[in-house]
Image 1 (tube, rainbow, N blue to C red):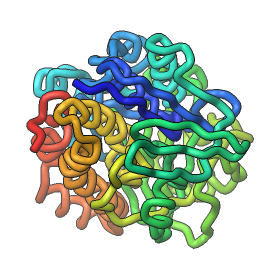
Image 2: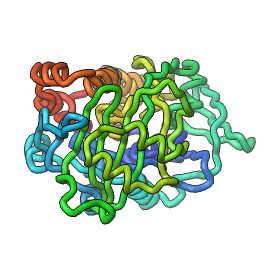
Image 3: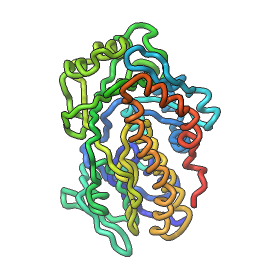
Image 4: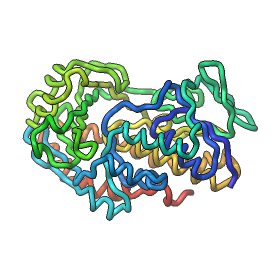
Length: 394
């Protein structure tokens, strides 16, 4: 198999995963990251079997399990009474069905593990303070330029630089974004502040008119992750680091289930973040001759299916495989794109559709919609059952 010099713009979860997959396959990789130090903001993240197959391939499954939580089930509840509308098993059943576990962990923990693994393979793989500004592609290579006036050359460039991707913007222009009408609150609460046996160790979705809440445990049950979606005309920045007053969070969930009130009351008053959610249509073109996209740069996804990070992890594994299928870079990138666009588009669209499902205006409509579809059966059939390391590539 031909070995390439591969440049990656962005050291997020997708870029780090791709780097380790590609280095393990024998390629030389440089990750160029704009920040002065590695780190990740955010809170909880969910790793279902489809992503865990790749992390296991990188030797990280045990470490992830050690810092995460294996939830017993996925539970859909009414926002005020907490009545369970539908439930499907995770934990042992998920692993039996799909050959790998379902784990919930802190985003920063996963990022740290991926960064450490990449640096084990090459201590110099990450180049910090390299903010990409543009690239030049030619018949014999690609050059990535940085804000400090320096540049790097390689055979292939992977744009893993997120929602506001510089690489994508140069290739195809800025992705059109439409405000969904939703904003997402996030908070992480130490479990010691909550009552004993407060909520069972499951993935809980409280559904109500004009909003929903997702909550689950992290770090072996030491933390409670809270994500609250509200419908609002107040459009803020599309950033995970914008803080808003706790009092506003509290007011927006007045009348919701006592468990939601308890979590909000226990949250740090100065650590409540809210960002606006924008929808982007699926893209079916990710590549040129030597440049391709990965993760949010390729398929930005709303967080209503808990698969954004999993998709970027899948991307890296499939790209690793396609580069080993042919000695022609352009052909390999087209095979990668061809085998990823339909699945990614389906997840983007399903995530968007879940926004409506979780915000139905009446209990009668919630009951009717969930009676029509078994969420667990559906996701087990096509979402979690996908293995990027073994799926047939066409």
